[in-house]
Amino acid sequence: GVYGYATPWAQTLLEWARAGKGSGILLEETLGGRALTFLEANVGRLPESVWKGASAIYAANAKGVAEVFLNAPLKPGAIFTQIEQPIVEFLGNAVLRYVR
Image (tube, rainbow, N blue to C red; front, side, top):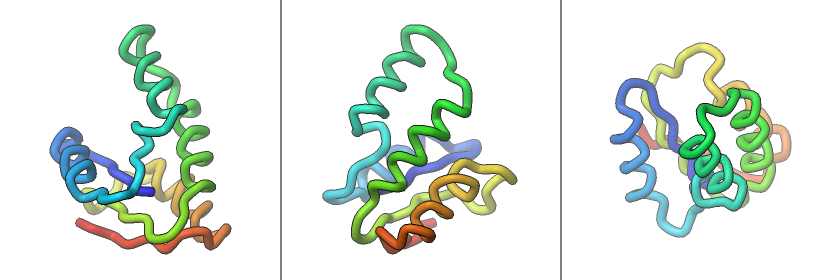
């Protein structure tokens, strides 16, 4: 997997993650990610808890080397540090490589 997160430069980081992902898969490219993006575009902003659930499933399915595109420092309570990083570290299903 490839994780792309943002603070003020969301579009730039997403473009960076897309360009650097290689054969990795962004959350937005998964079936769940596409469905949630569609819902947000057509229904409205989804609760953060929905994205946290999708992120947990995404992290649990990560394999190999997962490149992480982040703006540092992350805000407290960021989904990556709160949900995805602990899951990947607990399961040991991927090695996180940070690209900043």
